[in-house]
Image: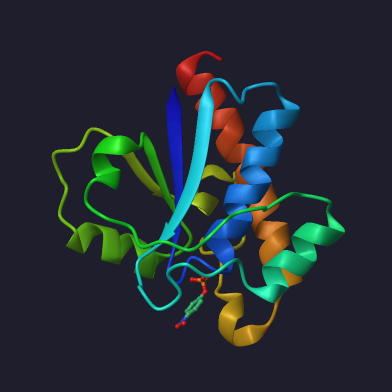
Length: 156
Ligand code: 4NP
């Protein structure tokens, strides 16, 4: 099983959106028995909460399910449990580096790293801007590219 964990700060806006979008893509490509998806946040403030209304609204409009999803915090165990830790921005990457798991043989990267010639290298935080549509554009583009990359790397 290939395990992918999306990371952001609060685990209520960007990473749950990526989790839902990516899981939906995986399902469409009949890879649900090969790829498992989850998300987590570096902060603890929203642990146990469902995705933010802005994220739920856009997922509803796209008819992408998010049932049962609840925020959780990233923990060191995740570096052993997952193959890909996919962050939304540079700040998330710094946070993961502070957790200091340099021995783990896993991919730690930003979502937009997988997009060729991406104009944005970070997925900006919509929690403070309310720009959930823009977030969705970046997340869906990033998820498609990420899935292609994982398929190539793992020959699936
Ligand atoms: P996210 O957005 O990292 O995309 O889930 C945030 C949500 C909450 C907070 C910050 C960012 N917060 O400070 O509570």
